[in-house]
Length: 221
Image (cartoon, rainbow, N blue to C red; front, side, top):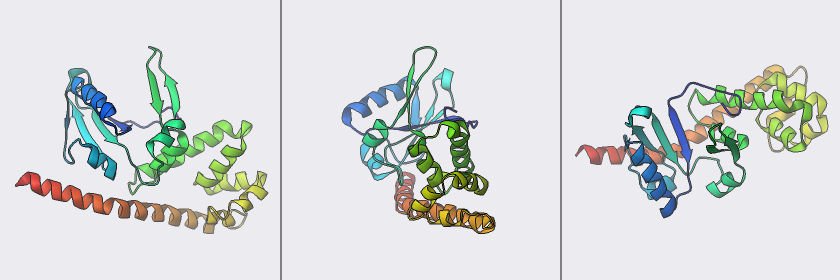
């Protein structure tokens, strides 16, 4: 919602720094919410450091049914200290401060094997493009060239910054197809890029899923 790509959701994702003091604070908050672990793994630092997410369901009446997913490590995303330095801060009307993952980091975190994440990723980047193209910075231009997933917008961007496009082909090869008349090939390259990211995410999760299956099997015994 903060980045202009709202979706209806009944869950909250938390990226946290794993330290004894921080986990103790989080445990107190979860206790106040009457939150209980659902499924596996258990709420332990070791599993978070491996890349697992720990899932909770809240039973406190005001938030009954709310799901909270806690993680500290995500595929392709920098470590927590770097995420924290790049965070965006949102102040609510009641004075509550919310520390949010930066747009660039959120986009990277959305590159998963799940179907629902790719339309969201596209909306996040496109909204940023439409909101800032009138006052773009060099950093924003590079971000758009790296992440825009719509052929028409890539062509529009490249028409204004052809030299930068050529300079960035090495980091995103499909930018070599961002030319009039190559729209079909560009669309196919974007699809192949997405499929490669989905496969990379499946490969990342494969050993973690095997560990979860072992945990489930042990629980059933």
